[in-house]
Amino acid sequence: MIKIVAGKSKFLREIAEEYFKLLNPQNKNGAFHKRNSIYGRIETQFKIKSNRSNYSHYGRHLYNNLKTLITGIPSEIYQIQKQLDGISNLYSLKRNILLKRINKIFYYDTFRESDTAIWLAKEINLGVCVYCNRQYISIIKHKKSHMYLADFDHYFLRSKYPCLSLSFYNLILSCHGCNSKLKFTAKFILKNYLHPYMDSFNDILRFSTNVLNTNFFFNKGDDFEIKLKKNWFKNPTKKDINRAFKTAEIFRIKDLYNLHKDVIIELIQKHIIYSPQYIDNLYSEFSILFSTKADVYRMLLGAYVIDSEINKRPLSKFIKDISEEFGFLKLH
Image (tube, rainbow, N blue to C red):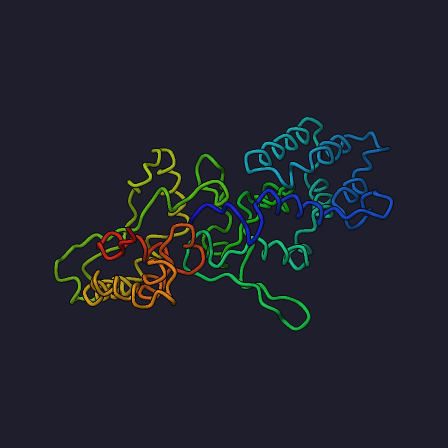
């Protein structure tokens, strides 16, 4: 729910460049490996150096733009795919033949279980799903291999844009529910939906409560609802607000978070019990335990409360936003 700007220890551009090299290993003589590199498989499938068939035009454009196709930002990779589609239409290439060759080049299903995919997920280093902020995503050691407790979502549908199957900015670490159940075959494009590497949902919309009855606390959540509203602190554009609401609708954010009304009741209880003076006393008396006041709130709320950290633990944005709305969270 916040824009992904860096990985575990590297900037995204650095990760993308290293990722590209891992996808294209070279022999000792400097040539790209014929079978294990994307470059080598393009040459094998399209014979671009010797063949003059209509299909070779497609393969040549793919080969010449591969670096950008893998490491380029979303708008760049989308443009290359559209150029490839144009070549396909110009030369009346048969889609079934083309797809068969493309699938043999990008090998997504094989990639999904590869060491490179594990490396990439670890480098991106997300704690929770970037779409919903409700589910942990993890990779754990399983015997001699690794087990995913996460999915790689393709922002641009793999079925519609097959050449973007391994593009760095098209692989979004997410939970299985968001990827396979909610987004599924939704056709995302940049002008209509937020992109986790380009946009911050957190900067555009905030969680809020809509109280329907002043006795809602005693009715344990039946008389209020969770909603989303414009983040006035960041002053987002009308266009981005519309994109954010469309994105939230796809992932059923409002419906899902209305299942967590019990969290709101607990926040009210904590707000009553933990006075500002009590929190200040905790911070001063146990300074050896808490490096910042945000650490105190993290212990009390069970969530990260700094914007840059909300992707570390489920429900952190939700708890942070509502705590600020109630006047409970005061970091300054």
